[in-house]
Length: 451
Image (cartoon, rainbow, N blue to C red; front, side):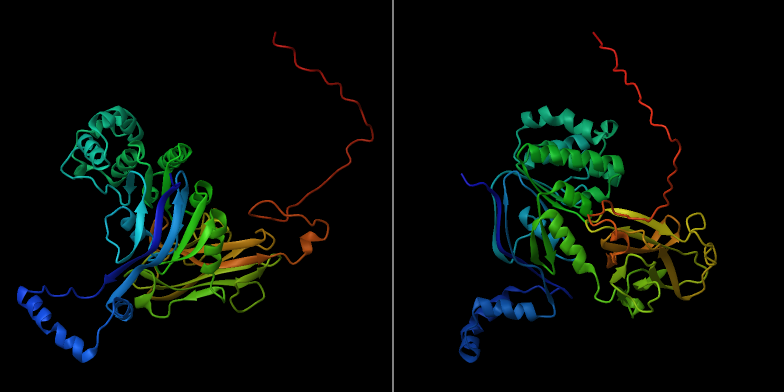
């Protein structure tokens, strides 16, 4: 028996974008068949390959996924990462049989459960109890098997009081709890999970991650799509990186994540949106630029000296008179773990920002956050740029906007040549005193035996 759970070969999905094509009548179809031989004589026969090539060049079409090939073994946890629009969700929808591929094939060996969107597969008019049995039946479970798992599902979801309430009245968090509980407890051999953990609270995330760890140890297969890169590194043995619908990297999870973050880095340590209409944001605020600057250097840089101050510069357009805006950053390390976050609020910033709490006029603004010299360790770091209308009210968030490398210039290695442990590597103050000239023996008394 083969150990392959999922076998994907040259998988592709083509979408037509723009205005919807008009419906064709029976007369249109008959006319097309009548004149088809004459068109072939005049223009020559076109093969399927040429048609596919033409369609790829059509401005009204988009390959959401193209030439994707990989295999997943039984019991393996595979992470799928990539930027927005990379094709991650399209891939999982094809594997779950929601979407039909345009080309290629995907073989699934084993029963499958999927959690692609919050509450996907639920009937809004049915109660939570009824949807558990409905989802179980869809997965091929017998009623007796579902009944045996029912109490575990309800306990995990923590919504006992609402089991007989139609799910259309559930909050998104309640949807998530029940949907994950059903998919995880009905024993599918293969579980597809697409970014659903982004909705839950911290404790429920921990609970879901623990459950997925249990599932993998039971020998079942998991495909996990997530932007939370530490989850990918800690939970998955392997990962694949998608970009523009193609598999561009495959291998050990940590190595793929590091490659992904390194490719996010712009060559000059900056990203600029010159047209406000095309920039990230909304009708309140839009980003113009995010830059990495080094102390003493006037231009942006993707490689910085560990012994010099690093400046994170955010430029943004305020589009409404009188807004109170709060710029902020998230800093992540080379596997996506959060190192720190900061904003210009007076209780957070070391210096007073004159625009903190002030009404912004319409126009372009620049905010700068300073990271001290000799603070970060060597390695790759990524910046998420945020501008909020309130301290906790995010209006624009550009994840992994720019990345930069911190390089050791040798000052701290004059007396130490090993690898420094930790994400940060600050130069801290140490002081030693000679407190006595005597060397006294200290008598040691072992604890009494408990029996």
